[in-house]
Amino acid sequence: MEVTIDQSNQLQQHATTVSSRKELNHRLVSPPSFHACGDGRTVVVTEHRISVLTHRSNNGAADVEINAKLDVFFTVSEIIENESDDYFFRKILCGAKSSSPEKQASLYVNHLGMENADECIIYLQGGPGFGASPPICGLGLGDSSSWAGKALSRGFKRIVLMDQRGTGKSSPITKQTLQNRFPDLFIFDDPDEGGSGFLLTKDQTIDQLQIAYPDQSKNVVTALKESVDFLSCFRADNIVQDAECVKNALLMVPTIGSESKPRPWGAALGQSFGGFCLMTYLSQIEDPPKVCIFTGGIAPMLSSCDDIYTSLWEAVKERNLRYYDKYPGDIETVKKIVRLLLSDPPALPSGGSLTARRFLQLGVSLGGSPASFASLHSLLTTALVEYGGCDGENQEEFSRAFLKFMDSVQPFDNHPLYFLLHESIYCDGPKSSPANWSAHRMFEKISSIQPEYDFEFTSQTNSSDHRPTLFFGEMIFPWMADGDYAELSGFGMKALAHAIAKKDDWGQLYDAEKMRLALGDGWKSKATAAIYFDDMYVSFDACMKVTKRGGPMEKCKVWITNEYQHSGLRDDGEQVFDKLLGMAKGSIQTPS
Image (cartoon, rainbow, N blue to C red; front, side, top):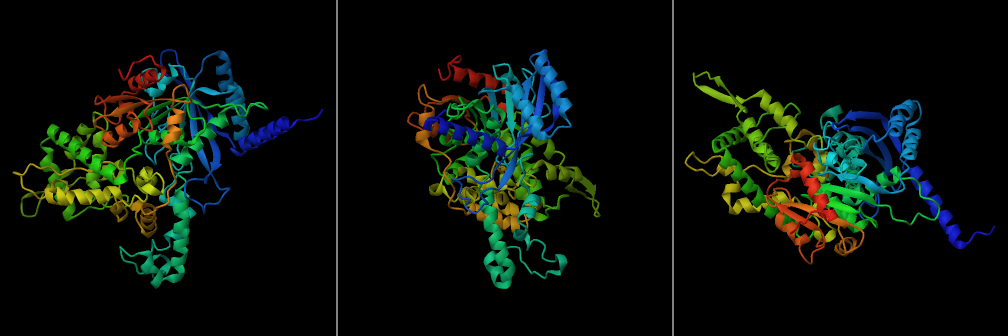
């Protein structure tokens, strides 16, 4: 029987699809776990891994090995709806423990038999640099316990939580893994180790080292370029491609001739930076999720990085003032702590140093949950302990419990992507690059004009001066690699951070016209967004530029509220999700 050209093309396309599916190397990580979630609901959670390409186009990482791969970890949470499901998960899948992880994944996919992803919702978490909250212990699955529990009651059969590449269990990026991958980058980190004889000063540059140690410096320069190119692959453009790979791994291979039929996610929920990723989804993926839900995550794509941070510093100041209105006694407490830290910053158990500026980074929590003010106040009241001095007068020092808490509460050591790539999320192509430590530069500029931002000044004012010392917000600074954080410091990490900050050829993340097209009337996707009026992390005004009439996301239905802070999805997830999903479906008339 003669094969037509169309049939031949279909066969070739089908073979390509099957081949690409095999390359994902989908496997189950462990046997399924079962959880009673109330109201007669039993939820089964499965843990998965796939392998994806490290480097794709559009990210300015030309020197990354073309076929290099990394792992992406994700969980799937679903309700056991009938005896057939129960038998499969408890008997067949649990009984297949002796089979290969790939075979177990194949059994799972065949049992699902998903021809489309209409009943799946994928969650894109905030950050960048953090893994998704694990189901049950980090995210409740009861009907009223979280957004995910509510989603399972609103027609979604499966909740997919993906650790974005480089985070959680997805080939995590830490100083340790970077040292293993790029050992030459860290040649100068331990100058006395092994009698190397390197004599480095704290602020020595590569240019200076190339004169003193030309051979070693050549290797460092090569490793630095390779590491910058590598980390350039960990932004939203690749994250959304990974999400597509996760979806494809769960779907049945399409039948011959049906490969071109769209099979998008039923929905995607983007919190904070996850919303930024969702805007990249709308810009770069041909068939984005049918419903796109944003919570505190409208990327300020029409504003410059410097303008964004200028606005955010004002929001941080306002949030500080609200905190001190609630706890006016803490004005003097914070000034005292800052003075002590400026005078003699103590070493921390991890090897870092509790400087005044590191202490003030506790302010990152002030835009969070309703308990954030009380939590900070409680911590400050336990920071100092008194002891009798040799002159008979009581003196104060930092409690060991406080120092241990400070060492663990700040996430940067364990999640360096947050430090290394945070400002790059505002770099939408070469025209908005480099970021060049924008938050720090804007802080220096503002504090030179408005002294109330200068913590060294305000901490020295007397009790009659009621101007408080202001905590910082969600900002990163170059000095974080100067010994304040042990895992961010050393010559290698510092050089890497500065090279990324100065990178001026970032790929484009957003496409206004494609977003308009994807969200057009009767087109591919619907979008709804919660925009928090008092948001300390995402500029309200910048969000409104994007969503106003004529903006790239003018078709996104917007709910503006000051009932919640940036953490609304965590604090009241079932209500926030229910409202936004209702807006998308047209059952809730917001805006009115």
